[in-house]
Length: 95
Image (cartoon, rainbow, N blue to C red):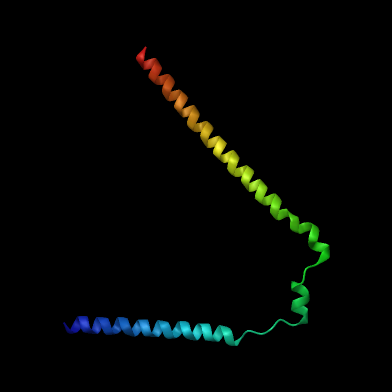
């Protein structure tokens, strides 16, 4: 019985320490936040020279869709071929 009591107190001890550690971690993250300076703001601002290169995202999405469709078509074709071969074998067995 004493062992169970010690086990629960140890578990609650670890839980309380882990909660304190999370609080300290979140607190330390908040303390070090600094507003970006003018250089950082300039680097994060949109650049007109890079604008033509940002349109690739839509093309990538279209290409992914085409790839997904092709994958489905290939898998369906393979399943159809397997079905046809199985049906032909069955028909050959019956004859």
